[in-house]
Length: 161
Image (cartoon, rainbow, N blue to C red; front, side, top):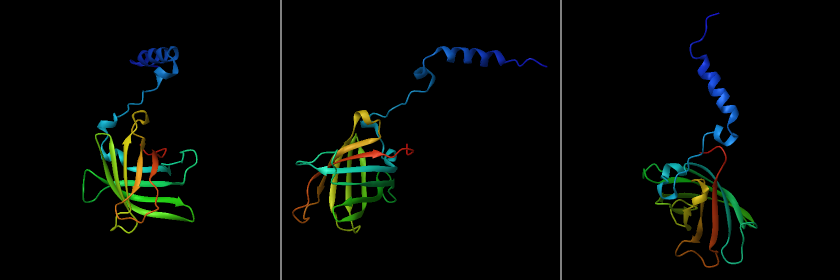
């Protein structure tokens, strides 16, 4: 049997790894600073929770759903996607488009792809590692009275990084 020339390297690496704590053995997750988040990092499926700004709470949402973001075909620095969410009495679907710039998230929502129904304004959360957005969804100007201003949280679905 011929000796393998680099066998000792593997043996030494294994011996070192056994003596290290588990946290040192796995590569650290590198987080993007909110100000450095690029629109492409929005691509993928996001889970949504909405609750009224006045008297509501994230623990008791008024609506839940999902957003699927993809590259905007007409504006390279933006995203376009589909929103599906529950509301009392029925489900809603809408088209959305927006972007993230310097950690600020902006989105326009339209049920018919023409008339703007709502605007979303928020921020990338510093502790969310680019996987969480929080802010406010408000009815667009000219929308019927009675629609509430809602807080939102968007969390990137597991597996979409």
